[in-house]
Image (cartoon, rainbow, N blue to C red; front, side):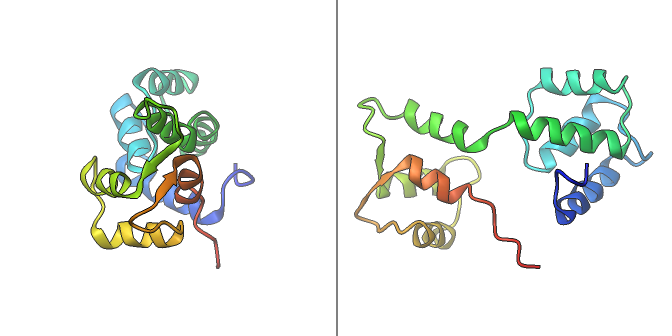
Length: 149
């Protein structure tokens, strides 16, 4: 599985795995759910049940890496975010005002701070009076952080 993930990612997975699977293996659906969601993934209950069944109800860390690889090929955050923008775009223009985008980022879900939104806007070359093509914005916002080590 090391060929699918960076060493830094595997270390993060390992730390989270052993934090919640204290016996050294995942023994139930609750443990798998907490671990995967703690790592920022959003598997459905059906997916989680399926993953646990594939491993006969118990999962070692090596099994967990296999499941993480399998799930990462299924979950596609950028396309899900673009689909959410499209659902809120009745005229199908493909754009959102910077003001609306700022409001969404600061007030929905785990709202970002003004400073965090300013940093994202700076990175994406968005000024506060502009219109943003949300597909382009999502590509920038969901791009992996450069690995400089």
